Image 1 (cartoon, one colour):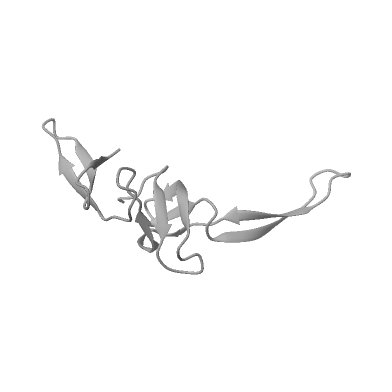
Image 2 (cartoon, rainbow, N blue to C red):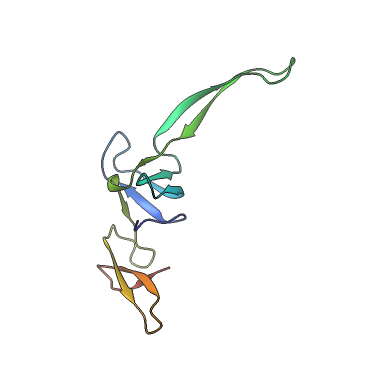
Length: 103
């Protein structure tokens, strides 16, 4: 998966189209990511103690990785990601627009 935890992403489709956010968690097996402030669902929490009140909280749910696009930290634009190997054989992500390494 070309998107990693901590990346800034742009939401391309869905009810949150046009929003930006940071990736909080990735699920590589399912091809999904959790983006902060996007795809929020309401969750009802029961009171745990006798004197405590129940509450409703908003929780970010995963969205498909195909619905997000990376924002390059160097050029600040929505970009596609490529890979290249250095001399030691390490694989690095590369911005397709500004040709800078991302990491």
